[in-house]
Length: 454
Image (cartoon, rainbow, N blue to C red; front, side, top):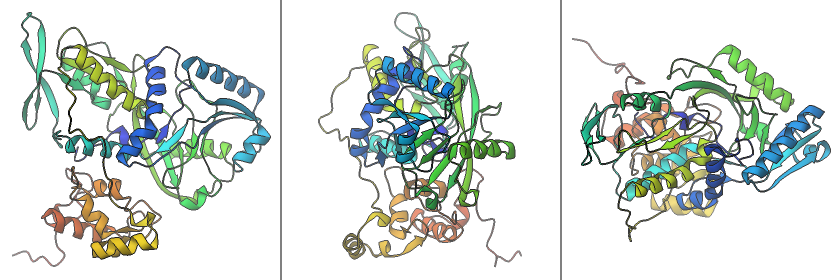
């Protein structure tokens, strides 16, 4: 991948789940609850947008209300605070856009929404600032195998397309491909099935009466097609759930999008399809155990496996990270607290969020913040330049997009793209012909129009 967060991270519902849905006693339940509680401090330290807006599971029948009561009891068993059942009148007062058929809802006050792109980027940038090296466009092909002092088979490194990386411990955190790396290490029996979910993104005008996250009653394979306000003020619909074979199949389908829109309209009948500005699909790493895999196998030694991290993986991620540290410490890694460790990260200044005085001040410091490149999202040249020179520099259009929100508005980049390519080429010291959308062969430009062939 040409950037961090190129897999499931860039295509999910961006929700911090309360934790009532996971099976009691499961790793999903344990780490969902622990991770949720960490988000306020984590996002404050990393300057990531997060809103603990609460979430609702909407019931439209007596049977639904029985399901919601069962979910409430499950949540209590999982230790989830702030769960309550409300009637239909109260639900419609809180969320006027919800279907008039609503008879009640389960309210989870600890639910929230976050920017998953920026959360991943922020964590990675913080790691780099604290001494970590990130190797992008580096494919893990195999493992380096050896024998430890006790005669046990051991993993002592990773073979990649850019050489061999040696390490006493290797962590498999490969998303959809985690099972394939497990098999290469001799760990058979676990399989990941890609589960596709398709989404709509609606213009901000659609969010005028949306305040939180709305779920329908869940199904055995999905939390259902939800309607949610996003952290940046749009509305998002989805996902559906469809198992596929190809781990790179993120194409949207007419049938899938129709399923999503139909389900969303049941929940919020006033949605206007004309407000749609984007569709996309993502893949969840659905594991054969139906739970997270977080373990250090006894054979081979030197390996720590994180697999099947599907929903609520985003919510659980900070708690899983802490568990990784515990497991490595238990395995013998010497853990010494660094006196110079910095848990914070400063984000790129956002012109769109500044008042007039702040705008005048930053333009006085750097005039490029006075040049608006993306009119929909009010993104300036100064922000694009900053993205190209971060601890993990943005080297593709999509990388700039995820760091600045350029091209995410109503015009979807129709106005800004040529200007962004020019700025990126200048800052990165390359030809505009070399700028790609997402790495590899995804170039925007083929040749100069005035080029003369001899």
